Image: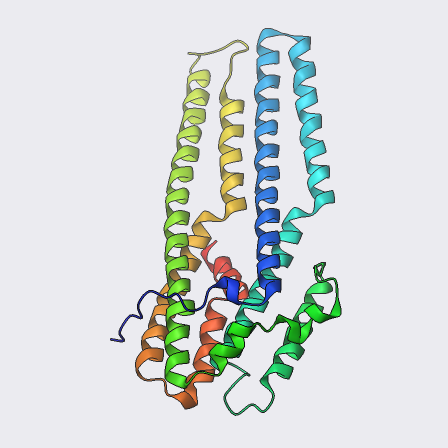
Length: 304
C-alpha cells in the first residue's frame, strides 16, 4: 500500500488560476438559485392543490380564488426560471471552473499534455485553456475577464510556476496530497450526503404514498365520504417529493460518487507506488478524467 500523504499547506484553490475562483463562485451562486426556484415552485404548486381541495370541501369561492392565484404564481415562477436560466448558467460556470482547475493541476505537475519533455508548456497551457473556454462560450458561458492580460498566460500564477519547477518526487507528493486526497475526501463526503438525503426523501415519499393509499381504501370502503378526500393532496405531496429527488439526483449521485471514489483511490495507490516518471503524465491525465464533471454525469446516467 502507498503511504498516505500528510496534511498539506502547499497548494490551495487560492494558488490556482484566478478564473477558477471567479467561475467557482458564480457556479455556486447559480446552483443555489436553481434549487431555490424549483423548491419554491413545488411548494407553491402543493399549496395550490391543498387550497383547491379545501375549497371544494367547504364550497368556498374565496378559497378557489386563492387556489387560482397559487396556480398562476406557479406558472409565473416557471416563466421566471426559464428566463433566468440559472441551471444552464450553473452548469456552464461549473464546467469552466473544472476546466481551469484541471489544466492548472496538469500544468503544475507535468501531467497530461504538459509532460516534462514539452519545450514551451506555458504556451500550450494558454492555447488549451482558450480552446476549451471557446467551446463553452458556444453553449452560453459568459467570460468574466475584462481585459486581454487576464487571458491565456495571465491565468498562470507564480505558485503554478513554482510547483512545475520542482523535481518529480516533490510534484508527485504535492499532487497526491493536494489534489487526489482532496478529491477523495470530497467524493466520499458527497456520496455520504447524497445517500442520507436519498434515504430520508424516499422515506418521506413512501410514507405519503401509503397515507394516500390508506385514504383511497377508506373512501372506497365508505369510511370517509362526502367532500372530504385527502387522497389528492397526499398524492401531490408524494409527487413533489419524488420530483425534488429527481432534481437533486440523490440516488444516482450516490452511485456515481462512490464509484469515482473507489477508482480514484485505486489509482492513488498505483501513482504512489508503481507509476514512474515516464508514466506519470498519463496517470495524471487518468486521474483528471475520473474527477471531471463529464465522467460523473456519465456514471449518473447508469445510476438513475
